[in-house]
Image (cartoon, rainbow, N blue to C red):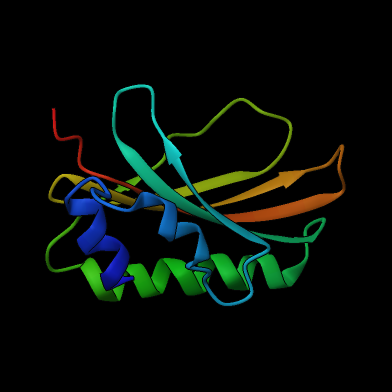
Length: 125
């Protein structure tokens, strides 16, 4: 996590192509992305069966880990409720110009639950 935070502070400057090889434990996929606003980021996804207890445990693990890592230097933002038929929860940690977030999403049409970990780089504009 500290490696990702360091790279995000420079908006993942340099060899962004090397980041997809970084895979967090058990993740089904990890990748870099480019935001329309010019920032870069990195995200991983874990896929579970619909409403699996393991998904809630994974979300709680990441949320607690992020809180321990960043609590003394982050502004924590709890997401606003959404009008959506599926369950959704999001925690964001703003560490200076970098945002690290973890979310839990139920997708009933797919009969899947997902946990996402996302690191948004600092836009250098």
